[in-house]
Image (cartoon, rainbow, N blue to C red; front, side, top):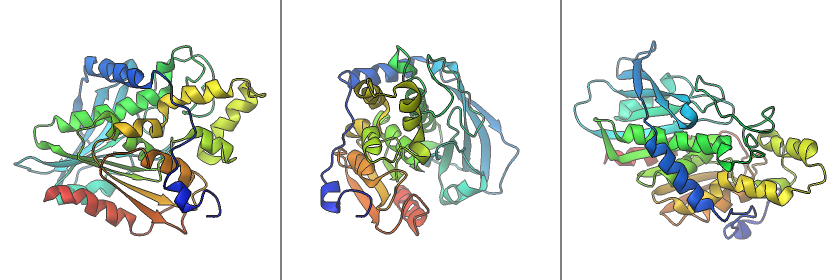
Length: 321
């Protein structure tokens, strides 16, 4: 390994970021808040349509009364319950094109692809916070007196609401719903699986949002994680509050959520990844006690992994059997 721990150490690494003492109650209370909030679901036929699919703009209400958007596609003329998959995109992006989801629809899946609030799609970001909102969603809300103002807390809850809405659809078999995504989408996949333990399976590709202190200690607070460096340079230049900072981020660290996962997991890691270092991904994977598999790409970083889209498709279509 040229950039991280040797593989034998990665297999036993359990993370270095702190776990807040009230972590479980924080998330239990957050899930209760979400459950008490009416979802106010709207399905609006989209301008894009395809011969084998019915396509909709899905809108729902998330925490803070934000209106959140997802693309929703389902097989045209489906007459019996079928599986579904929820998709999550990379950091700063959006739910992508309609047509790149049609392979799953053709196979018999409903597909819901979330637009993360405040990023590239039309979802609303309405979280009022104390502190910086200039650079980065990881640190948005980190200095607010209320840790429930962390933006990614609300985003994680949006993933759970998306999955719950899909599972409740009349034509979806709630026992055959999966989640998938890469980078930020991989982190959100793990968060969704932790917050919706009834999911059947989840495929997380080089997940982001894990083990923030490890990223910092590796001097890799760059690219997607550069807001960590931005925070220290502007708001804590002597690191007097470093422990407090990482403990606050512990609420939205997917390695801390990983023990809640109950569904089958497939994770993929490029062992040369300098954006989401392998150890940060192993920190989450090693804490999962559910059935799991880890696919390694020794010569690849944070990039397209040859054949992995096909591997994920086979993993999800096992739910058709």
